[in-house]
Image 1 (tube, rainbow, N blue to C red):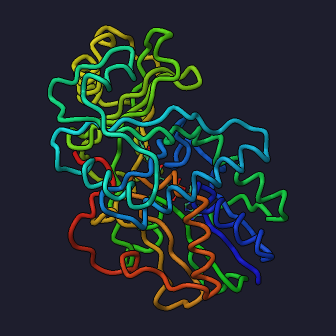
Image 2 (cartoon, rainbow, N blue to C red; image 1 turned 90 degrees about the vertical axis):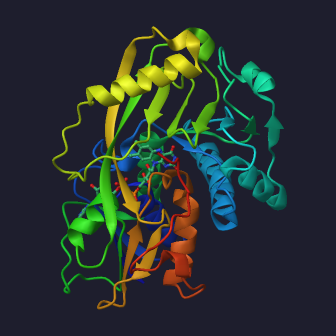
Length: 358
Ligand SMILES: Cc1cc2nc3c(=O)[nH]c(=O)nc-3n(C[C@H](O)[C@H](O)[C@H](O)COP(=O)(O)OP(=O)(O)OC[C@H]3O[C@@H](n4cnc5c(N)ncnc54)[C@H](O)[C@@H]3O)c2cc1C
């Protein structure tokens, strides 16, 4: 099989690598560079967690991906994983965290329900008086995203994948048996009639904490709309507000932070982690989400070109799944499984709540 994969973010690089492992002849095309800072996969770090509320499918996918990431790290000798665990700040006893807890128990994935007082021991400082509890995932962690994306593309090349530098336009004459469009926030630009994905900006801040923040866990305040992690790789303590924005163009969005977002990040840090109240901002990233309306991925055939697959809609939670999503997509391409109804093209309603709520 001759396959062309367009887009060398985590999704495209993983799919190209997976198809090559299965014996396909693959070309991986990229308009900028694998892990370009303009892509969602080009961020410094991404959280990997198994908790997805009641969504067992995504819980299992993340868990499978975790194994694959660790194998890639082991085989390549390149550090891409920080095993720091992840704390979910539960504002109620019956919300996303409680539903996740049931799913994790069903799937046999390690977790603990901590009192706010006990959770305080996980961080150099934590104000938890507004929390009903903390769901602790000891085997969750942080991926070095840009490095991991580039590593996937390099490993794909080692497996025989040809790299093509350049922008690919949808054109019926593309010379391949299968074309996978894994174009992240560019997918709705390429297929505006088909892909209902909203592209929004998000500003991410890194604060300069004391050395005690090195190795502190990842954390998510799901109902509050904030997430982050301790100091990883010297980047600083990550604090990310997850609030809606206007739609943006991924080629043109200005990647300087908005003062309002910085204020929100600082205020949250000061409230939740009092020792960070006066910490300086030591790093900033502006990136874009490709949001499906219901937070589910998009994995479907193009209605007019049977051999084209559209894959995207990472919706702010897609990174961790990369290699496992690729297995699923490759199975769909090879006819070993049917794409899930939740991933099909067409109008999406409801909200599966798979990412931090804002
Ligand atoms: C601020 C932020 C925080 C996030 N946090 C997390 C997290 O903690 N955990 C998590 O799991 N996920 C997280 N995500 C989501 C995750 O990063 C994305 O879902 C994932 O990286 C999307 O990967 P992708 O490969 O689908 O798209 P992208 O990374 O955007 O890659 C698409 C690639 O395709 C290329 N391309 C597009 N069109 C063409 C074309 N026509 N020709 C050639 N090349 C083309 C682009 O240049 C780009 O390199 C976060 C996202 C953001 C923005």
